Length: 136
Image 1: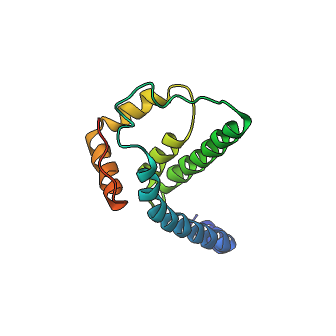
Image 2 (image 1 turned 90 degrees about the horizontal axis):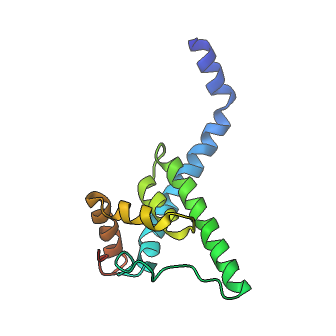
């Protein structure tokens, strides 16, 4: 059994190196982008329930919503990966969820923001972007 593990590690060493490099890059990018992206969310985002409904008025707006949702999905997947590799997994998942559009999003956001450690972490990261804390 130990020989099999040693052999598999030797055979797939280059994959392990690539996983390490990609993990490091995602970690650095998430460290740099997280405060910036949290700073883009309005301070009163969690107070007004109907203010943030998506209204698609023209095709260009639809493209923006699709791009935002794709970026959010990438952050969500990267956050899930960062739960087991170095990085800010939970924060990346939250930002990904905030960017995406899907049914039940508002309920999920309010549930997450009412979790006190998550609320404190988000406000701490907002302070790094020189933005005021979220209201709730």
